[in-house]
Structure formats: C-alpha cells, structure tokens
Length: 324
Image 1 (cartoon, rainbow, N blue to C red):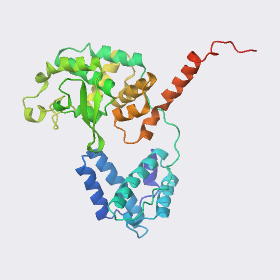
Image 2 (cartoon, rainbow, N blue to C red):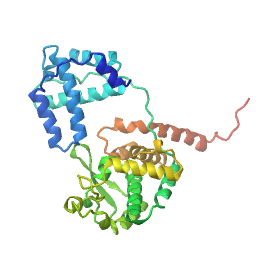
Image 3 (cartoon, helix red, strand yellow):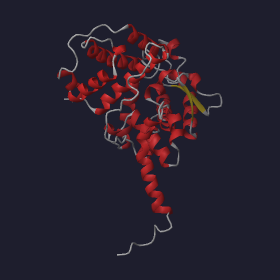
Image 4 (cartoon, rainbow, N blue to C red):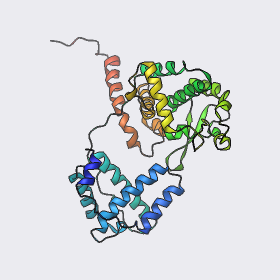
C-alpha cells in the first residue's frame, strides 16, 4: 500500500469535501494565470482541498488556520503513514498559499514561517553513467529517416540541457535562438531561462531541422507547425508518453535496462555529470530552472565524491603509504 493510500484509508481526511473557499480558488486561479502546468494546478488544488477539509471539520476556514492547527494537520499526515516527502510537499503548498495571503493582505502573518519541514532521508537521484549515456546516443543514431534524426536531436538536447520532459516536448520553434546556440525555455510559473546547447546538440538539431517538415502531419498542420517537435497529438507536439516510450526502445537497443531510463533520469544524469566535471550549484540551479537552491542540492552526492577524489589525487601526502 502506498503512503498516500494509507492516508486515504486511515481517516485522516474528513468524509465530506466542502467547496473551496474564495481565497483558495483565487490562489489557484493565480497559478493558472501565471502559466503553471495543468498537472501543477491540479496537484495544488487537490492538496489545498485536503487541508481545507481538515480545517473546516474544525470550524475554521483554511485561510484562517493557526500555526497550531497546521502542526496538527502535519501530525495527522504522519500518523496516517504518509511518506515524509509527501508531507513536505503538502507543507510547501501551504507555505506558498499563506505567502500569497500575506502578500494580498488577507492575513497580517504567515503561520508557516516558523514550521520545519518533515525530516526526510537523504535522497540520491537515479542517474546513468557517462558510458551508458554514450551508449544510448550511439543506439539512437542507428535509427534512420526523419524520425531517427528527431530521436537523436531529442536525446542530445535532453542530455545537453537537462530540460524537464514537458519543457522539451513543448518547445516552440521560436525557442531556438537565431544563432542556434541557445534555447529560450519557459519553465514552471511561466518563468523564462536561457540554456546553452552543446555542440553535439546544435549539430543534431541542425540536421533534424532539415527534415522536420516531413514530420508535420497533414491533418492538424496548423496546430503542429509552430512546435520544434511536431506530431499528430491533440496538442500538436510530441507527447511526454511518446518520448518516454522512445527512450525505452533506445535503452533496449543499447543494452541498458529500460526500467532505468526515463526523461527524468537523463535530467538527473545531465546534472550529476555537469557537477562531476566542475560546474557549481548556482549555475546548475539556473540551467535546471529550480526556484530554490535547496532543490538543486539533491546532487551534492556528486560533490562529495569529487571532494574525495580531489583529496585522493591532489593532496601531497596522498601517495605516501600509511605506516603500520
């Protein structure tokens, strides 16, 4: 049973679901207006609905919750068996909601300001070795035709930039700078960032653009024409599910277990390899589009290994045998 399932079956959520308050609806509408992804909007609404049910059952609107009540809510999640990571995510949603209320002067305080996030075990992201990524790219180049060139362009771009899968498949044609050196990416919250392309990625995109017209469907061409990676989907561009499927196919051909390969694993691989070769966390944060440096710090396991290697290889006493 999942941690979330445990929370649902344990009775931590009241049976009835009252309508969301005006302030919650206004906050969710603000997320939509700022360009948040639909999945993000749905997730925030679901978490705030859960919290609202908790507060209303205690005869208080969610926007009027006290710090003590929020602590009780977090405690109820823990007692219900919810994973610390999920509880931390819900607290993050509440922090942003109450900051919004404070900014709009609905409240004159932020009850989440002094709350600590639930303690979580150190999470090391899953990533591939450089040799495994090279194997995937080599396998992708064995595909022929326009779809083969598109596949190479997708993998080279994903590994060169660390884009989120939704950012990659949803790139408009205009995202590519005129000189082909950069991508202008619209990330979470509608925030734009510029990400440099590696030479292999630039070359792969250049070759792909020569055949891109062949992948624009005759039916729905108007919807597909403006996307960098057009397709027959209802959105007019390649879907996340299709990209994930293509990566599994490439993994099989490369001899890498398919269950170890996904767009997000390649994003983690980009970040881990970049740090291993000397990049700093702040630069990586900007390229990944993380709002908070704390999110980028999940990759510090690489820094730990780099420091160990530095002492091992560069310390003047490293080669002296230990005295017995």
